[in-house]
Image (cartoon, rainbow, N blue to C red; front, side, top):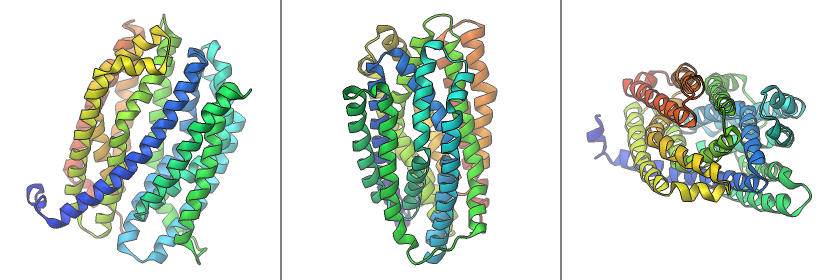
Length: 447
């Protein structure tokens, strides 16, 4: 059924209603996460540009430790969402048990690695001396909470795949309130100082993980069995997504390192880039929300063997998200300096951040479109295709071009921002081409 005909189909209309229902809930969850990040950047700024830059660097490393969890959450949604509509609840329970065991083991191991070696990695990155000490302390504390972040993220994925996303919204609302409140109190009103930024994250994620486990346990009541085959399927879908996130976050750190080599205002530019990414993440709230909604809706439809409806709903969901992202992008660009000034009182940082917003956000709708289509591709298990497109674009185009223009030809930070835009253009073209080829529909595994 072509898309034009599908628009008139009541089934598609119900699918779009479901996509919107999932998207607004995911958007609210992403908004909570954005508020946490915004509070982190604001508090870090109260301690100076050095702490703000150190926070940006340490948080990039922290997210690298979360890579396996991000990949597992994609695999979990892909498998559980299809099982939820195609087979009985016993199979869903087995998949959830298998996921939780995998997540606990991975999270515990990564917490240990982060605590033992996080500071060493920061030192090895040869970051500017004035931010190194702050970054080492922050990553050492963040690492304690890795296991709780793993549990929170993947139990959210389970609830999302089983159409219980409102419970995730409740949990993340509590996490956000605790995190922001503790952030202000511990950082500004106790001797902990800037370390309160990381400590508040660990405490709030501990509470959030316990709440989500309580919600998930009702799906596994009376069953303790796990299935190695289901675990293998989740891991098979997850590892390309996890590897992609490694490439992305190492790439972000590479951009930080490239910026640190600028001949002037390198620390100010690192702080501005940190702030710019947080501002940019605000616009990406609906993009990620619709991408995750696409994964659930497309996954449920593939579980029902409705491939054409899955394809159509992916496009319609992406178009809806694209309109929202475009409106938000225009709004932020018209208020660039005001928003940049909220996160810093350093005029140089504000000037550089304003330029970043005005340049980088030009490509924001393009990136959003690609990410939302990628959500549909991931639902089918086509994580390898997404990984190849995004990672090759990052390491063969974005990073080399940023270095060449920004450092080698000494064109400065503005040239780095334009190099990023160019790479986004090519990434979006190839993701769109892959989605419309429909080859990914044939990759959906029988579960």
